[in-house]
Length: 201
Image (cartoon, rainbow, N blue to C red; front, side, top):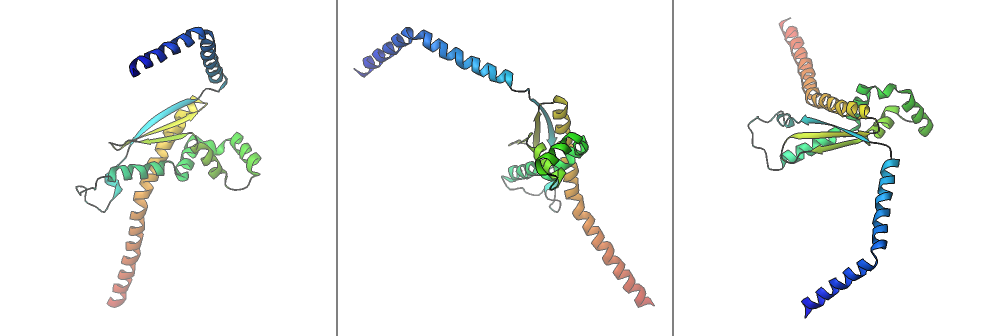
């Protein structure tokens, strides 16, 4: 009978485990000891988190505020904002806010590893981005930013600096096109005024 056969197998397994309990206990103890030793040898890492509310109305400044948004536009917009948060421009802004761009030790490491070739800020931004974790929410327009490093104060400073740099970059993205339009219309209106003055004369 299959069920009886299965019960006999379980009984056999229990007999083997009882006979070899010392071997099983030693293996479990060795795994626990190895995990404990590794966790004690590794340097402590601290994660600081910050949250930012993403402005959905800013996604399309031309469209009316009450306009229909297609399904999936929230997730697409949040993914875009996460990519902006992880961009080199935002990272450079964050490291400038914290003052890492003036840090002599980072400059020494850059010269040592690159021979002074390339942009120091781009190199440092790449290093800083390694500790960044951006978690956009699926059901809301809130984004969580985590920063992990061996220094708790640096983690907190960089998490907040990334949020601040992201907000500044988002404002530039929205304001720069308006400035370009203003400059275009100012230049065009000056030309029209000059033409009017010439016609009057």
